[in-house]
Length: 276
Image 1 (cartoon, one colour):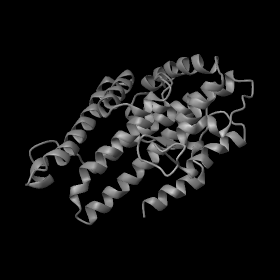
Image 2 (cartoon, rainbow, N blue to C red):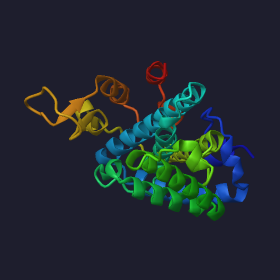
Image 3 (spheres, helix red, strand yellow):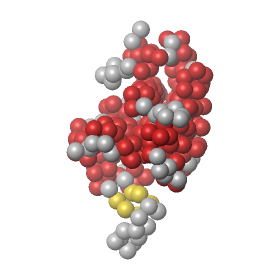
């Protein structure tokens, strides 16, 4: 059975790591996520549309950023820049964890507070979500997330003089291939959720709800990170590319679509350029 037979959507996305789960586990999980999706799409309103356009877009960007970081790890290894490995490996895992949470209809948005959750909460919630599907796989994901977090913190706050090899020879080494496998699994589950949510939108939403670019400002206005030159809003910075990419859904009057379809060519090219 293909994944598209379960999600009922031929998205074109490639699934590789999700096969570590049994067919019965995947089907049971899909049924659960359909119920949560229906609870949202049957009560669809402007706030729901804004929320899920932003959530899918953020999920996509977390996956793209993880890809960028993992490519950087490969470069760092070839260049013997081992000092950056803990940061790159950990944040690639954290970002794909966040991608999964953004795409999961059972996780509440709480007016954007989901964006601001602490690393500890992201790891805990990711573990809880994977455990629903497979307790065994949930423990694996939790272990690698916590080990990667520990290694990153060790080289942020203590910086052992013997370096990474001296530490990893005594502990569980965070290998690149295992990190890639975990990131891919988390990304595939995010995509899986977004396909189910799109089908729920297609089934339950009949009315066209108009929104403006301004309604999506959570996706392109970044508050309380840096000071800006804007006297009217000195605590926010603005990204014109995010504004344009999210505006596509406003211009075309679209409801949320799966993450793979959200990945417009222009945005993907931007992340490729960032990785050079």
